[in-house]
Length: 210
Picture 1 (tube, rainbow, N blue to C red):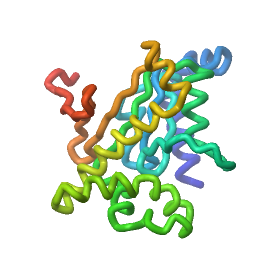
Picture 2 (picture 1 turned 180 degrees about the vertical axis):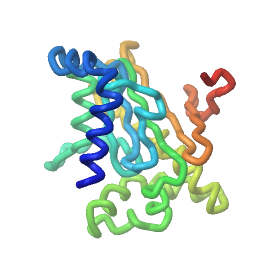
Picture 3 (picture 1 turned 90 degrees about the horizontal axis):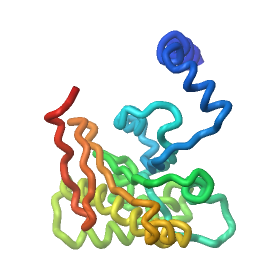
């Protein structure tokens, strides 16, 4: 609790002082972000820090291993899917970014077989949706390190593909009013990769760093 209170006090004395008018405007006028960002819940990967975003600029949904599940009409509470629908149909974002990251614990768990027992708890059930991704990547005969990295990338590609299974996403993408973007962040090097139209990830140039 002390850590939370001190953090809040630091926020009030620092960033809030510079952004008071912005917070007041957002509170009165509502949010109008152009970008939705689907990221991992991992504490080491903060999308707003990575993209230097102010409050109100990104609509962020985070879960274990930054997964977008395929459409599921079964009864249940579908938090990530609800966030996507809200971003597309209510907010009207122009872009959805799915960002994977280095050393992802969810991916490590999947590789270790955590998703093979979907009745073994919430995490097992959640990771079971990428068992087929693991099976596909494991056929490449990769080392442990390569397997981790390729799974982190392939899971982003799979999530982008899953997004296109939602009618409300597909309609806007085909109309040219919504774009989908894959991204990958290296924690150790603080380097960003973005996927091209073929799903190939390219390192972003940092030669123009401020």
